[in-house]
Length: 304
Length: 195
Image 1 (tube, chains in turn purple, red):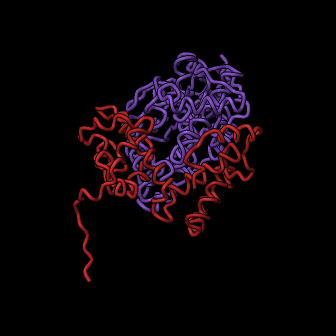
Image 2 (image 1 turned 30 degrees about the horizontal axis):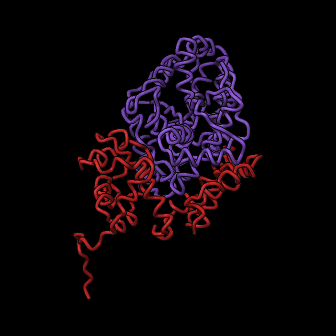
Image 3 (image 1 turned 135 degrees about the vertical axis):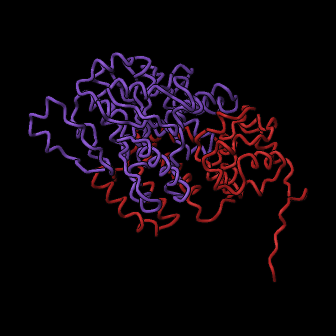
């Protein structure tokens, strides 16, 4: 299986642990990812607030390059990129004024776009193309006993996703269960984390993140699994500020691909787990490891 | 003298034609069918902080109360979670209407001074248009300089944490064919270029 790969800016910056874990996990599952040639920023929500026409042009350049170079399924791990690229696709189809502007801009760069690129999230590809069974077969280090709160955030499941539900998505739940983890019932799984309001209006933004952390702790989770670099950043990097405002809610937030990597037996450092502000506790030693004294000197031993 | 403020709106406060203009923006054409049920406000995780709830914004736009809408904090508190858009029983794309209002407010420069959200949006757009990509840490520093430099001092622990975890990137990300991107954006006669 081969896909074009659109990392987006976050996966090269604050969210680099997402890419660090996604690439080896996909490789282990036999998926070839070809990074999109000279991809540009999707525009995210910010560009859309300034100029919708230009925002669609930005997104369309990526879609057109994917169409030209192939493969036509574009893997897009970041939630904002996933939403914006899909939104541009819909806007070009639905609104003549946007379609005209996009085609005019593409012509200026000798590009064209017919609408054949499919924008797809790793959850979609892993669940529907690879399949839960194939994932289960790769597990060498089951996450037995690890209680995981599955947190999807908003922009992957709303409003353009066709691979899962808007309010009660289950694809990540099932993938985590296939890894052997105990998936905690987490009704806030698609509540907003506060997005960039955590930085711009902390009183409102950070509180949304606090509610997510507190609820995961209350439900007995050991760790929160996320699929979005901004959600991960908010729940992890602002942890200090959140605790200072509203009290303890200590729990690690990691990418679901990092948990997959652990279950596949990959090294925590190779998966970028050392980049967490709130580190994840190491997995409980397995029977085979208890005889090996080395397992007791693993890093990231911080207690919750 | 005691300062008093009128708490209801008069017909003279309306800017006739504003509602129509917003409804003409791509994706905003369903607004007239709003039944004022309030599902949007109930779904919105941020409505408790808003001066007008999303339902009120829908009514105000439709009734041409341009100044009230563009000066509201509502449009800047919308985090684009699309909950309202998915739940609206009349298929009104409320999030897209919020975008149309943000664009309009930036275009007419009526957002509150020192409000970091529109500044972030503008700096973000500027960086993408010139480099093709965003380097998040550089963008945030840019934002602090423009909006609130004191915030830098309050965030030293965050910055330190980003450095120790290797997430602080100072090498600017950029695309190779920047001229190609510029020529594409030049064909759009958009909001960003008007003063």
